[in-house]
Length: 152
Image (cartoon, rainbow, N blue to C red; front, side, top):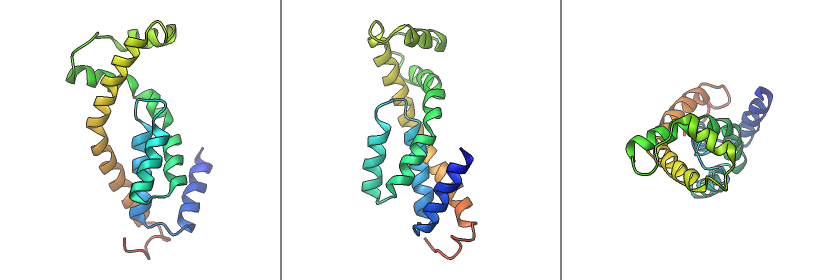
């Protein structure tokens, strides 16, 4: 995995991306990759990359590398969303995971409510995540020798 990340960054360097562009692309890709909706992150990354004129390959790679976050953060996002929006069934993380493992056809309403609550929490946290990740990656990339010549 480390080799793939290094190769991705090396290719981004060779395409002439500025520290700003690369940091924004990765920050958006990772944040979108953590959205608690399995089917939506790729399409969102395509749209954001087009709208902000970012590198499609880099944003999709960051999105896919963040996929474990999507799984790991589903229950914490659900819990936060359940606190903000206390309507509907209230479930423990264990009950939610048990319901998902048992089979989705029997639990579709549970899955929809849990996903809505998790996405609402993600929407609250996503802007701060993008900003924080952008600042971290911008600092890292601006200190790399290849980028010190760029002024963006």
